[in-house]
Image (cartoon, rainbow, N blue to C red; front, side, top):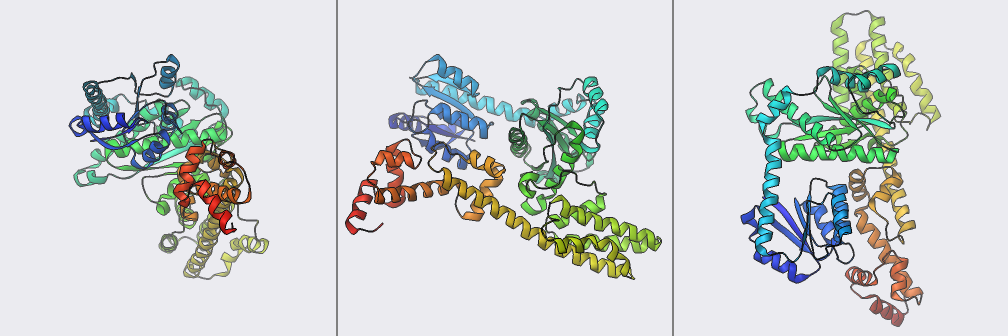
Length: 545
């Protein structure tokens, strides 16, 4: 059953559509009807409908503006415009916004039913296309040559020289890569309900290919993305765009669409890690390693997510992260994500392996020094070495301190204490970083509340965070959503102006960011229980602010 919403400022139209159409018989569940685009957008963000039926001309936010927001944030949703306006420019805008259909009123109930059946058939066909296992098997046989995948993997994971890159792009007919660019890597969380019937590795391999197929199809729908599979069968991509903010927006949009489609069509989930931007194709391995680091944060933040290393570790991290052996990288990841038990277990495993290897003491110490270097590299990677000179100097002595122990067991206990200390430092620093970002966001709202066009994207660009991560972090830190905070600030400023000035109500509305004085009055009454006029008169009588 697909979910649908109606958006029209005429109550008779909404009431007629709601009552005359047997929505369930046509495969749809009507989850709401709204009189303007602004109300509908709030419902769309929470209800995630599959189909939106909207008029064009409405107060506060018209249908084309609503369609633009849907196209930017939820490209998988379908929008159909039902309008009495037949101007060609409206139809042109609708085409640019990828509106599913543009239909002129009046339209009969029978035509609406036929339209719903048509749209449902298209949705069913789209879903069937993704679920058709025989089609996936056929595409598996016709997949891109292994050499092309290995070239892209070498470029992203290990690095190539400029002549090798140019030769490879020419040989495989790849589009030119224009920096800035970054790497992103996806990983299957688990196979969901399919875990019960997976008989062998062949079944798992087929489902991994199905994920890559969705990854490939999604990337093909947009410019500036090359996809490949790693040797561990993880789908990955190299993404490029104009400007760093545009690059992160494009990468997040691609990752979010892949995550959504896998969950919807394959009924299990993936997590996607987004690496840092780099200034040239030769630096892609730095971005690739940071994407893997972002993926490691799944331990902390849960499955079925898009995790950007810029959100998780800030923008101050050094780009030149040292590539670590797998064992050392796992320990560094456990420390960064605060997994104290896992860090202790990894140290115990290392000590036990060295003990059973019977290697010379000098060789064992060299290996343990590499672990210490990995831990020091973690602090350097996060950009926290210069905050306390005494502590920084103490950490540099760790490489020498390792020689004062007489047994592997003593070194193991010492490494555990180091790991525990670093976990505490990183957690404190990360909380401080997040609090600082939220404080900057709140200050930005306080400073720009009068701008009627102030949006979530403006705030995210100011604090350099993706919209989804910022929204969750802001809610957790302040107890409010962005919209709730902005509305509260505006209403408080309006209350102050009502009491301390003689400005007209439309002037106050404009000063606090509302172009429409009627909407301002409705919102003010909703939050204070009084209309602006009543509020001013009451406070004038009692003589208090």
